[in-house]
Image 1 (cartoon, rainbow, N blue to C red):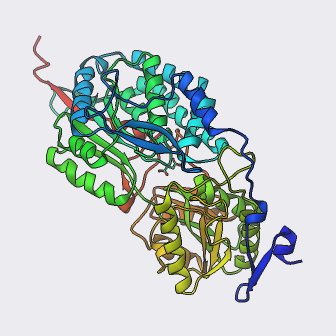
Image 2: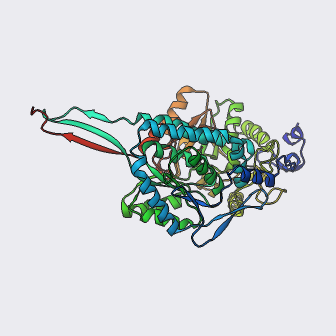
Image 3: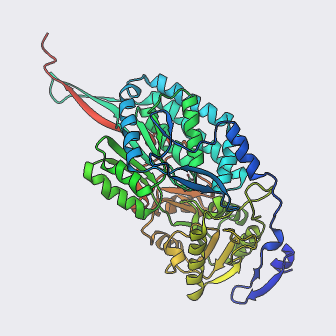
Length: 527
Ligand code: SIN
């Protein structure tokens, strides 16, 4: 039986080179919307979580010139809310509020800060359903995944509420007998946190959790595409008793806000998740006042499937690594490298699994793939596929806009990809899985490392020695072995090469918000 027959879907043509059927996906897609976006928005409004103003010094504040921007539901194009469109002036006031609040927040005991963070965590968990709906509404990811993001995001607050109590210094044996040497760890000061649209909550808590735990105060600039979750989380920070000015949120004109954060000598740290291009600009801009920077930038994750892999495990792992958030994460598998002995078997099983992914509005039952964030994202996907096919790659599944319209795109698998194609050089950030064939372990490592990025990599093998050997050889900050979903608050997340600087999550995530101070007590032998 052909794959298409097994799947019971319409067959358009066969790719003779690979013998994979070319499949049109619509048959399995769902249109049934189980939740009405409008009623979700009105429920959020009545619960007080649908905030549209910025938060400065504990006060909900309009843009000073009254300007607003629209936030749209990417699944329908409908406007969900008009939010304040802020710029330099509002950002400077938010920085002053954070600076003033720093004095008292940093002097609280670790236990006091820990308790506030824990309360904030409890409130996020208590409002999990509404917050999950809000993420689906403004970002588009399926509700189940959005609820998963609330647990993941809240987990950073829980973890760092505990770490707050473990900011230990050191005592150093002195080189001179009359001295006593100490190392203190102190908060860096005011932090500017610039966060992306793909994880509207988790990328905030992953930065703000450790910042607050260390005694820093923050000015958050969420993405203009998804500010509502950030504002809801900020509202809950106030309800948790976190003092006014400790958490501030400004959104709107990104360059103006970014430049104000960079220019201010009161901001001592910039933490950013987003594109490598913007990360480089922020790094250069931070040089003017010599700020500390943490950057979580783009990836180009290889997912390497060796001949000795368990195919079912590899398919499940590659599917999760590729199609999480409709392919819109920095750790999504961008290149699936498959060893020649298992290539056909893996490609068939993988295509079959991809074929089963339901596309639709994130509020519909059973949907696994939501819309892309905007039209520009779809055009990027199209141009990458066009480049690959013009150079010899073959579309074996999907490969076009979805019949649902808007920014929905068919989950796509393309074969015969090589490492010179655009799709292998840059992040596709969409539901497209390119398959690359390789011969030896050395080839796989060479191809995997042949990129300027170095965030996440995945290996599928049943050989324990190989798993260790390849993990060591990969120039990446994170490696998943026989697993496609590896992000967690308890482990360090971050890249090497042009994927960024610093680590988030885990005990290492605390170091990014701490300065080390050496104290020397002299003349200690006199009585
Ligand atoms: C990201 O895409 O930047 C974050 C992904 C994750 O936390 O797993």
